[in-house]
Picture: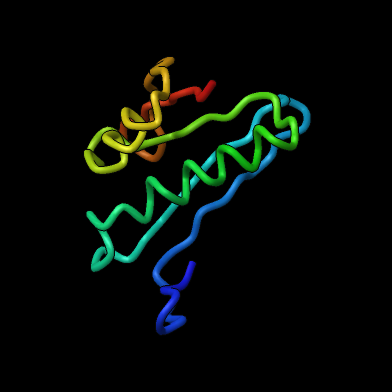
Length: 98
């Protein structure tokens, strides 16, 4: 993603489809200087809508337990918590999006 006015890159959002498991990971990352401005939520919702329009069957969010801002985005997206697990020594929460 880039800022419309300056074309300066600020982050990314996207899907990684796992065909064998029939789901897609929705992920986003932004420069810390851009946090709190709504870019992550807006782009994640747009990505979710894009996937739904194209029939992607299952969307998941994987969010580290210590990243409160991303957990807030999951809540605003009405994602459903499924379970937590450890990855590289960090607790990760898995959410599904309907």
